[in-house]
Amino acid sequence: MKSLDKLPFNNAFFDLGSDFYQAKSPDPVEGPFLVHYNRAVGGLLELPENTDNDPAFLDYFSGNKEFPGAQPLAMRYTGHQFGSYNPNIGDGRGILLGEIETSTGVKWDIHLKGAGPTRFARGFDGRASLRASIREYLGGEAVHGLRIPSSRALGIIGFKELIFRQMPEIPAILIRVAESHVRFGNFEAFHYSKKTKHIEKLANYVIWRHYPHLTQESDKYRLLFRSVIEKTASLIAGWQSTGFVHGVMNTDNMSIVGLCFDYGPFGFMDSFNPHYIPNSSDKQGRYSFSKQPEIGFWNLEKFALTLTSLIDGDALNGELARYQECFNLTYRNLMAAKLGIKIIDSDFKTLTGNLFEILYRHRIDYTNFFRLLSRFRNGDIQPILDRFADPTDIEKWFNEYGEVLNKENSDDLTRQHEMKRVNPRFILRNHLAQRAIESALKDSDYSEIDKLIFLAQNPFIEDDTLLEKRQIDPEIYFADSPTQFAGSQTSCSA
Image (cartoon, rainbow, N blue to C red):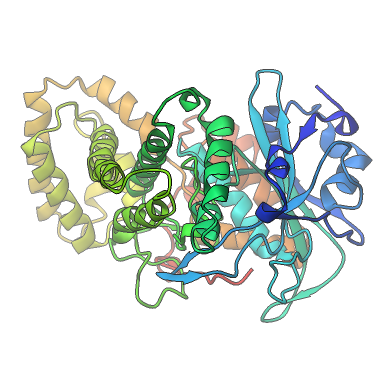
């Protein structure tokens, strides 16, 4: 455990040179105050237990005081946004302080989102709203809690100024923590400006920092691309299995290490709907739930273009061809686990296809259906049947499901236990997040954030006594979304 002024900061990205970033310190703020502190992430960074009570915490992480050894910078990157290339992006309001190496040798990037304008800000104020910061904070923990790789956050700091979006808003700084902040867009910046030596330099940095086992390989760049493909495919398979929709899958939001990254208008599906679009700005549905696997491949194609100076075109195409197989395999395994099925064959494919048609036709809540399905043959399935105005379809499907389980000689108790380990009781529903945001903005009441962070970190929780201690009512937090909130959307405004 180290005090804040003794944190072992380094910033290896700084050594790449000024073409890769703008050296920039966070802008000071007035009246910083703590909105929420994430003790789990504090533990990852090996911070003392009471770090959030240290007066220096607000000074350091608000930007009012600079960490010894930190070399703050704003990253340069570009990217394809809604299918079109934009050369003018970059960290317009984000500052990478550097990385901290723990006693186990793990390195964590520390990044302040909303730390003031940089040269990439394009005339904007460089700040983030408290509203958007809470959403990203909750989203990162909710996805991480479902065992999907994600950026997280150490906490949120608000400050006593105002920023203007559609109306005056309270600003905040999100203390983002991630394995890496390098995006596909970092490579695109140098590809489209024809700086191939910089692409090689960046690729070598990524390998050294994140894929050190490739350092001595003769074809290390091809193997780097393969690793990115596999991690991206696995990430999106995790999204599809849990019903998560990112909302803005631009290439500048795609992580080089396969993290769920840059949370904006994301959402978890309520009732099953392959066409669900959480982003109200996405009028064409480019980033709908069902299109995420396709967009993942499209983004990897754009990333592949940046590597043509390092990897032969045929080799790039050969690696790209692995994406679909990797995605399919991971996704099938995840869905089989959700259904408690061991044998993945043609019967499994038919079974899942039929189920999705039924869930869509009857508008059944995706998460709660699978959670309740664990009771099949070992509990009361009436709560499932009650969700159907006409249960004929699902009763027929239950017969098909039972036949598959019989063929596998499935043990009901074991299956129930295993299904509850992979089918969450809690997901971050939009109306719950919105309630936490409104309490924070209107009443400076952060208790709902605290409850949602606890549930996000424990989405499979069974012990209701733990919920009672935190005044968490299962009837509210685990229920289907109210009709008026089902399929709700948010905007990109932050």
